[in-house]
Length: 143
Image (tube, rainbow, N blue to C red; front, side):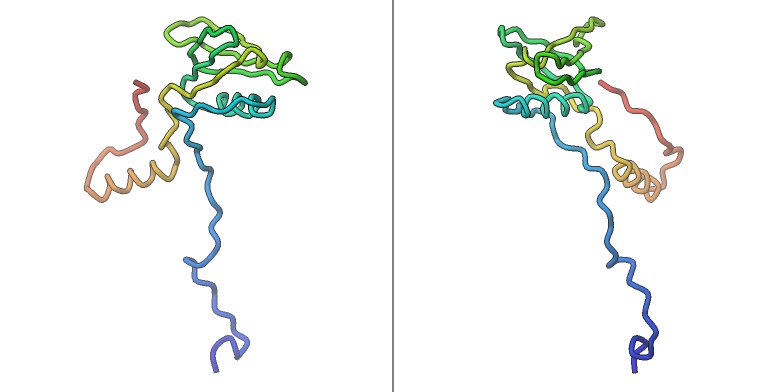
């Protein structure tokens, strides 16, 4: 008679338990989304707001601006929604209406790519196993 048959349940193997997936950082660097519908414009600009790099917006008049999106205001239509950028190589802040966006490209380096807790702990334990000392949390250069 096994433990189960005798009414004794064996504890589950920890390796077989369901593991919840962590937050996944979507790879957006270099992406040029299709902006065919209002929903696609809104979705792309929402992703651009969460992106940790510069984006390039081409306006409907053909002019281009590159910078970091630090704010967005979503209204009931594209005309009353706007995105606010800190221009690259400047401290100037500008606002662009969603309805004025003809194209969007994720052109800057994504400073958050590969910066997950899992990636950091893996690197930490690799360094520790190699015998390195003073391997605490250190900020990386943005450039």
